[in-house]
Length: 170
Image (cartoon, rainbow, N blue to C red):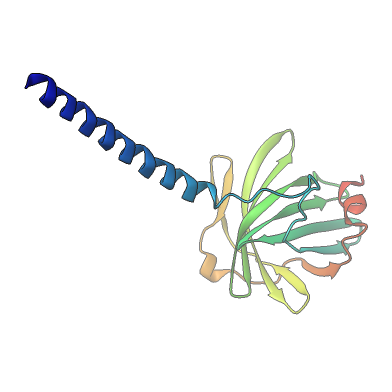
């Protein structure tokens, strides 16, 4: 009698384990079916569109390249100044209506700093916002973004083909 009960218990455990392993396989299969494997090893092209801007006043110039990467604005920026320190770095931020709200992380005078910078899109141009800045550590933010006046550098849209050469040039 003990052998029959023990045999029944072992068989029911085996059936129970068999069902669980089947369920796990089905779940794993469903997850694996969502993975897309590329047919070639060719690099995937970026889905973003780069837009470049430039403004030159006398011997000073400003260069900006921007890309909208799924709602996040990323890019590069350079202030190339004649008789004062220049700066070059990355921008990241967002667009709210016709306003680009960016943080410019740059190298100048041998140290890394951050500066909040806003641009107003007007046609094919962007105009830099001017306003009181407050310094907190190595980051400079607008004291009151609502009071910005868009009367700073007016950067005109330019062809991005030669942008890298202009951006990196001395």
